[in-house]
Length: 126
Image (tube, rainbow, N blue to C red; front, side):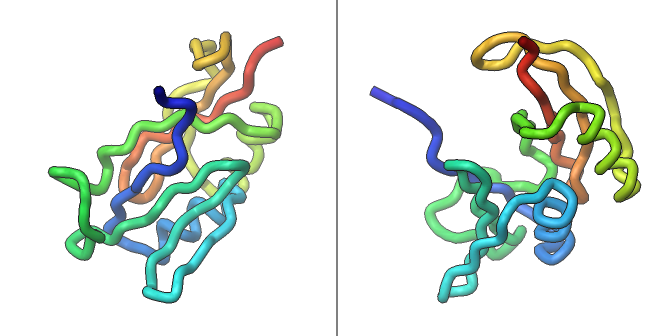
């Protein structure tokens, strides 16, 4: 019945800092809508951004910053990812480590965004 995820929602306390992290550091594209809503796009996916206390209805039962735990597949090597993160003074919490992704083995590094969401950045191992 379900074929794939279309989008998910990230709740942030600081919209500008959130947008900076995901666009300038992780390379996503910012999409702005006429009603002021914002989203981050990459590949065929989208992350809608809700500002804490100003969420758009309908919303999750308890939308709070820092509750997201997501794995993102990079088109750059883990070595390149580490270099980009270090250039922007983003601390790597764990990694590189071997994990299991939806389609096989991956190598990952874990970081936190400014809302303390856990962001796993990975490559599939051949």
